[in-house]
Image (cartoon, rainbow, N blue to C red; front, side):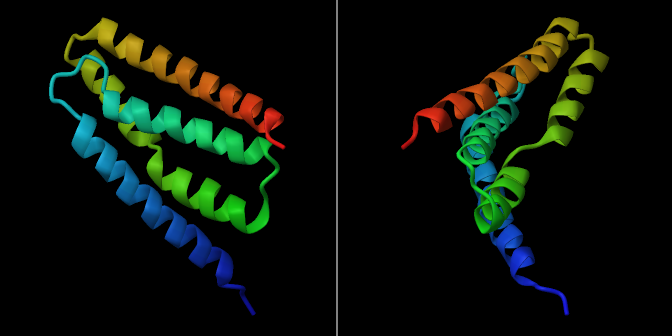
Length: 122
Protein backbone atom coordinates (compact mmCIF):
# COMPACT_ATOMS: atom_id res chain seq x y z
CA UNK A 1 0.00 0.00 0.00
CA UNK A 2 1.21 3.53 -0.80
CA UNK A 3 1.63 6.01 2.05
CA UNK A 4 -0.25 9.14 0.96
CA UNK A 5 0.88 11.26 3.92
CA UNK A 6 4.02 12.50 2.11
CA UNK A 7 1.91 13.62 -0.85
CA UNK A 8 -0.35 15.58 1.48
CA UNK A 9 2.63 17.27 3.12
CA UNK A 10 4.07 18.28 -0.24
CA UNK A 11 0.66 19.37 -1.52
CA UNK A 12 -0.19 21.55 1.48
CA UNK A 13 3.32 22.99 1.52
CA UNK A 14 3.07 23.63 -2.20
CA UNK A 15 -0.26 25.42 -1.79
CA UNK A 16 1.26 27.62 0.91
CA UNK A 17 4.32 28.37 -1.24
CA UNK A 18 2.24 29.15 -4.32
CA UNK A 19 -0.03 31.57 -2.45
CA UNK A 20 2.97 33.26 -0.85
CA UNK A 21 4.66 33.57 -4.25
CA UNK A 22 1.52 35.16 -5.70
CA UNK A 23 1.46 37.62 -2.80
CA UNK A 24 5.10 38.61 -3.42
CA UNK A 25 4.44 39.02 -7.15
CA UNK A 26 1.43 41.29 -6.59
CA UNK A 27 3.56 43.57 -4.47
CA UNK A 28 6.86 43.61 -6.36
CA UNK A 29 6.25 42.93 -10.05
CA UNK A 30 6.60 46.00 -12.25
CA UNK A 31 6.45 45.90 -16.03
CA UNK A 32 9.64 47.15 -17.59
CA UNK A 33 11.92 46.33 -14.66
CA UNK A 34 15.39 45.66 -16.08
CA UNK A 35 15.81 42.90 -13.51
CA UNK A 36 12.58 41.12 -12.55
CA UNK A 37 12.66 41.78 -8.83
CA UNK A 38 9.66 39.64 -7.93
CA UNK A 39 11.26 36.52 -9.41
CA UNK A 40 14.64 37.43 -7.94
CA UNK A 41 13.08 37.93 -4.51
CA UNK A 42 11.26 34.59 -4.40
CA UNK A 43 14.31 32.72 -5.66
CA UNK A 44 16.68 34.31 -3.14
CA UNK A 45 14.26 33.95 -0.20
CA UNK A 46 13.45 30.37 -1.17
CA UNK A 47 17.16 29.56 -1.42
CA UNK A 48 17.73 30.97 2.05
CA UNK A 49 14.83 29.02 3.59
CA UNK A 50 15.84 25.78 1.89
CA UNK A 51 19.46 26.25 2.98
CA UNK A 52 18.38 27.02 6.54
CA UNK A 53 16.02 24.05 6.80
CA UNK A 54 18.47 21.65 5.18
CA UNK A 55 21.53 22.68 7.16
CA UNK A 56 19.52 22.80 10.39
CA UNK A 57 19.08 19.08 9.89
CA UNK A 58 15.39 19.00 9.11
CA UNK A 59 14.34 15.80 7.50
CA UNK A 60 11.29 13.69 6.96
CA UNK A 61 8.00 15.54 7.18
CA UNK A 62 9.56 18.99 7.64
CA UNK A 63 11.75 18.54 4.57
CA UNK A 64 8.75 17.40 2.53
CA UNK A 65 6.50 20.24 3.70
CA UNK A 66 9.01 23.11 3.64
CA UNK A 67 11.63 21.99 1.13
CA UNK A 68 9.77 20.09 -1.56
CA UNK A 69 6.35 21.67 -1.06
CA UNK A 70 6.64 25.28 0.07
CA UNK A 71 10.05 26.17 -1.38
CA UNK A 72 9.35 24.18 -4.53
CA UNK A 73 6.18 26.17 -5.23
CA UNK A 74 7.54 29.49 -3.96
CA UNK A 75 10.66 29.57 -6.11
CA UNK A 76 10.70 29.52 -9.89
CA UNK A 77 13.39 28.50 -12.30
CA UNK A 78 11.07 28.64 -15.30
CA UNK A 79 10.11 32.30 -14.79
CA UNK A 80 13.75 33.17 -14.17
CA UNK A 81 14.75 31.45 -17.42
CA UNK A 82 11.94 33.00 -19.44
CA UNK A 83 12.51 36.51 -18.11
CA UNK A 84 16.24 36.29 -18.77
CA UNK A 85 15.84 35.04 -22.34
CA UNK A 86 13.04 37.53 -23.01
CA UNK A 87 15.28 40.43 -22.03
CA UNK A 88 18.16 39.07 -24.10
CA UNK A 89 15.88 38.56 -27.10
CA UNK A 90 14.51 42.11 -26.85
CA UNK A 91 18.02 43.59 -26.91
CA UNK A 92 18.33 44.19 -23.17
CA UNK A 93 21.60 42.27 -22.98
CA UNK A 94 22.91 43.99 -19.87
CA UNK A 95 19.64 43.40 -18.00
CA UNK A 96 19.58 39.74 -19.07
CA UNK A 97 23.16 39.20 -17.97
CA UNK A 98 22.59 41.05 -14.68
CA UNK A 99 19.53 38.92 -14.02
CA UNK A 100 21.31 35.64 -14.75
CA UNK A 101 24.47 36.41 -12.80
CA UNK A 102 22.70 38.28 -10.01
CA UNK A 103 20.16 35.53 -9.42
CA UNK A 104 22.85 32.84 -9.30
CA UNK A 105 25.18 34.79 -7.00
CA UNK A 106 22.45 36.03 -4.66
CA UNK A 107 20.71 32.64 -4.46
CA UNK A 108 23.97 30.86 -3.65
CA UNK A 109 24.79 33.55 -1.10
CA UNK A 110 21.33 33.07 0.44
CA UNK A 111 21.97 29.33 0.81
CA UNK A 112 25.30 30.16 2.46
CA UNK A 113 23.59 32.56 4.88
CA UNK A 114 21.05 29.83 5.68
CA UNK A 115 23.96 27.49 6.35
CA UNK A 116 25.61 30.07 8.65
CA UNK A 117 22.38 30.79 10.52
CA UNK A 118 21.67 27.06 10.91
CA UNK A 119 25.16 26.65 12.35
CA UNK A 120 24.55 29.17 15.12
CA UNK A 121 21.08 27.93 16.06
CA UNK A 122 20.97 26.01 19.34
